[in-house]
Length: 492
Image (tube, rainbow, N blue to C red):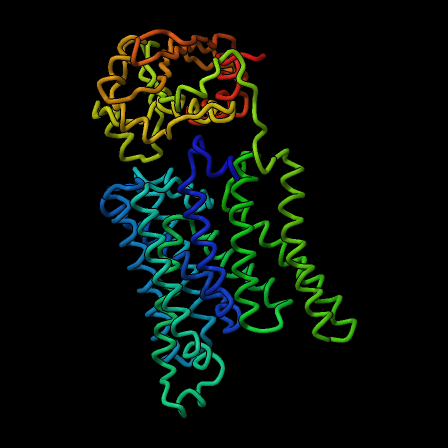
């Protein structure tokens, strides 16, 4: 878990966002399955994706986390999801044909519309491709707060009106008898579906939303003795598979969404096997409880087994301090922004096609994410792995927002900012990746005392590093970071 939520993890918000989506979808998915709305669970996420693609095309914006494009994409997803839902409900009441016909037509139309909007949109191709693949993109803090807050409201309403929803789903006549109008409960349930799907599609993609609407619920209903148990087991499976899937994908360089859904599918297969077993014996409470335990153990076993297969460890092994001095008595280290002396911008592409077009015409500002920023973030993580107390990355950036020109300047800037603990200054002099997967790097690190200006330690990394699996600048830093800082910090 330290790897996912530690100070050096670049995708912390994406993990949390995926977890929230999986939890809410897993709970609502029990009713999707019980009410035989699985086809609806397929069509509505695809309609949400079509709305996002249409919003990109109509406005020329892309889904930039935290920006205006994210709001526009959310509006497109909400409009298309609720529009499709309204058409289906109205069509079911007016038409004489089976409801599945309309759902099938909606899925076909939404799928075609998504592909066509992507094809004619000059700016949204990359973003929509990642979304359709189920890549859980990094969320800005503001977007994660919105997702969490809305999901919390959805869950509260779901729990507060669970009795009305239950009666409307399985005993409509009794609901009317006791004065509970089932139509209102249906409207609330569909509204919760719509909001959850619209937000989930925007942040995780239609594949992830549909997968977690169906797979955890199918697994839970195979073994759960009651509806309450089914909800609890489904939520547990969704939570475990979301976090574990992200960890496995991060380690094995796989798409995050399909990996998480594949784990949920494994839980469903395990539950199906358990169901066949208990049908061959007496369906007693003991056998049903044993089968339930078997599914939960299988879910955890899938996680730990896959983790072992990919070489993933629950916690990264601590490293020796190397040549770093003992800093226990000096307080936590502050990692300043690294200086770029390579002669190249080393800018990391944002993944936002519209932003990339602005960069092409020279509209670049100081807030752009660069290799030096990623290395600074990695340095925080590597120091923590070596048992060195270190200030959080964001806190360090706030305390020292400017790039120092040299170690002495870093010491003066830190002292002026009220920092009295050691400061790590980094100077990147070379960072060049060759076509054969070799990174040539030269990074000088200096640890200075802000009070006296004395140099406490210095180290450097200048040996080539293999990066054969990296495709982007961000991946280069992720792959090469441990080797770079192992050189710079040295070994005992």
